Length: 577
Ligand code: G6P
Image (cartoon, rainbow, N blue to C red; front, side, top):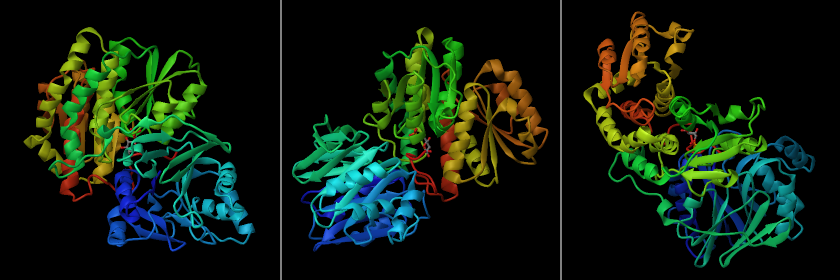
């Protein structure tokens, strides 16, 4: 995970790096640091905590160099401490490096360093890269970097600063995104192209490629030979925006959902998803696929399944030819999903990515892709990312009256926002905020939404919440239900009414407090508290029923004083497997 940045140009280097890191903070925010050259020596400035902590240390600094690298961390190897914070310096102080990814053979490399008398000072795999560079450096940075890159196993995007070339940055990457941006009198790198505002063109390094960045531009290499990779213009539309007066990005993004859905439906309705479908994703993106299974299987008569990206790699290699693997990912960078896409290609599936970031890795590794039009999503807990995926799948599958119902979804979503701020929804937030745990249940399309509702609550309130298929509750988990245990029942399909009523009765018989999120009058009447949502086609309802759940979780998090947009331990884009 983590985010890396690099800049060489004319501007104040500390300000440039910190501003770039702020745009990458969604990738990790437990510590951050920068490195640049000052009077021939490499200097690092590091802070544990948010980028704002680093900013306190760099404000007012005016180094004589305008070239440097920076990093914002999401801890994998070692705790978030100053020693583990990037950039890491080599033993002789000649190199500073920032790294995004995981070095799988780090134990062997650590032994190699130790056998040469070098004792790493951090617990990280990344520090070893700096030492190896100095170990193999014989005056030619590119040669040393190529040698070290060849020794690394795993995923990595690396930015290197060398004290002997203070205005240059060298970078290489494999299985980890790295964008190089060129603009007037500057050249920069970042693990997300969106962080390179001001750049006129962008190049994404392919596996095994490297780049030498100077203020006048970048040179690109593959296996030691100069190459001319294709560059794309930087799209200003993807630049990150502000909170527009909302208290949190999550709230703003929740309210943006109807518009995001309308844009997505308009853009993707002409595209068709072919063949048997296998929806693959992580977290909320998996839930989006899961909630669209009834639409694919029952309404559109397609063989379809939903799989967690991390488990897809381990699943049996069943016949996959003819199947379309639909890779769902807001960021398009999630490592498990990218790995699943590569595996699906190996299994001769068609691969089709549904992402919200046009320039992301998944769009490059999949055979085809569609981009949802949610706009930049900043809050770690996704809202419009989820509903945009749901409506994207609907727009590409639904025909006839279902297609007409899909077109109407944004209007119904507007009404669902009102349901999310009703007195009943507020009461639900208050109850959940003081509960030690909570359950979210639903069947068919509502099952995926129940999982998503539970995930939202867990992510931003830290309350243990279990999402379950309503039918599965009786097979063990019901033992956890006692007096007052909140159980949120999502119900949008009239064909399931009797089953839902039975489940509600069995929960209440054990003292559980049932909160319904439904358009069904009978279900409302049978529950302790009911959030009445507008009716929609049951195959499309996930885009609607999830909205009150997002708002309920949001309000509970605010009541608890949580850091809603940047919850502990999480990152928006998980770029490690
Ligand atoms: C992380 C986030 C989740 C998100 C998941 C998938 O784990 O914390 O909220 O759903 O990644 O992200 P993606 O960008 O692939 O949709």
